[in-house]
Length: 458
Image 1 (tube, rainbow, N blue to C red):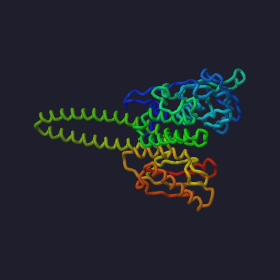
Image 2: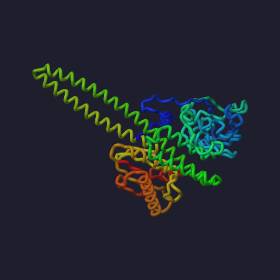
Image 3: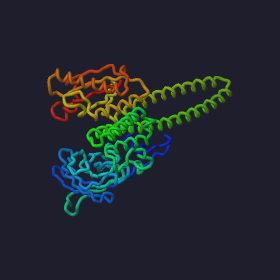
Image 4: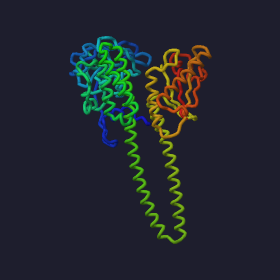
């Protein structure tokens, strides 16, 4: 199925009863952004807002070599439930000068340093209360933000920018934990976060548009409730189940949002087709009337021209639809993974740190990407074949790299099959070791690019 972008996702996360219902507006916020000097550490305060008046902290930021490193420490974070009945955690966000937003980190409740980074040089920081840590855009509940004390930092260039988050009532209207077995005040935050993630997925109709994934999240939530109720002191055990529940619910939420938008667009297209058909029928009726009035060679010429025009239109329409289908597949996959077009088809690259070191075991971030890719392919109406190709960098022997790349390619194939992709659609799985680099193996960054699994969609 096709992706719709981060803002589109945020807009669609309200439970819309009809696919063509007007989409809610995202909420807008304003915050301070600062241009940080090259190669110099800058220490600025984090100041609480009226929602989090007691919150305070510091941010130590250094821009060097095209990237900003951030060391963040917050104190006096209140129980997130005090900021809103649906909140269970806090998330730090980077707000760039171009109004883009990046999730920096989920914040621990106890005082400790949190580290992160961004490619931006000019940016601000905001802290929001959230229903769970893996949210994609900030909520309207800002409890703290970056500040510049005057006049101690007059050399810093600063301004304010507007940014967009989720709609105002996303985490309020139509969401409830009324069926939860215990009061929120007695429930661990990790358990609450799992419930919240499922509630939000339910609100965006994940049960309808992503039934398989949502059912998996519900089963995980049931397991969590049982584990926690039986062993409330075994925090490590039920926290792991809670994190898995959140992951499954978030996958269901993303798929449901995408598929709901597809349904909306499909209905729009269907209406356009019906209007076009009515117009064509009217044209045909008029043409028939004209043909009835003709009794000479002009009648034959008119029919021939009309037939040629219809044929050309049908060919053009068929070509347009085929190109549109391919473009949507590319757009959808590009929203999940790095994707490029080649003569043999679309190449989706599983790049970065996606496996355990020197192993073929997929990390959670890779499993999430592949789960989303599976959802796209399972919803794709056309025919396709997949070839899974593993690659490594130049470190290690040829034999070792060949074996490792083959194992990683087979691991990706096995996961896709588990997600529902038919085996016959993946006829080729091959490891190339270090024989097909896409960058020189002279730097750490280049070697990381070469450590990848390419999924060729033919």
